[in-house]
Length: 108
Image 1 (cartoon, rainbow, N blue to C red):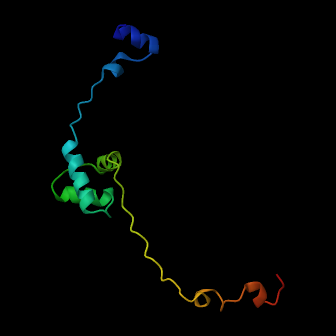
Image 2: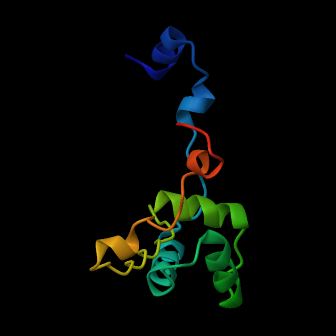
Image 3: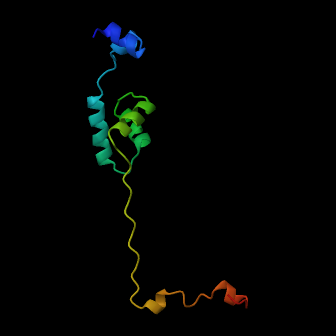
């Protein structure tokens, strides 16, 4: 089927179907962004954007955000610290804390 007929059938504009983007390839920029994100695991796209600009890469912040998201990058969270384990369970329980209902002399 011809392009003209196919576009008429699906009611699409031929210019939209034939459009080819002229945007530059971002492979080098993506690689640099991934490299910086691996070095600075706790940095988000905003701080990585600043580092890229310091290195002389002039890029829009929104483009940095788009590439960051497309690469699947995310700020890596820190693990929570382990809490001290109580060996004597009576020392760790709330034995010294009275319940508010009992404290006021009310029956539960």
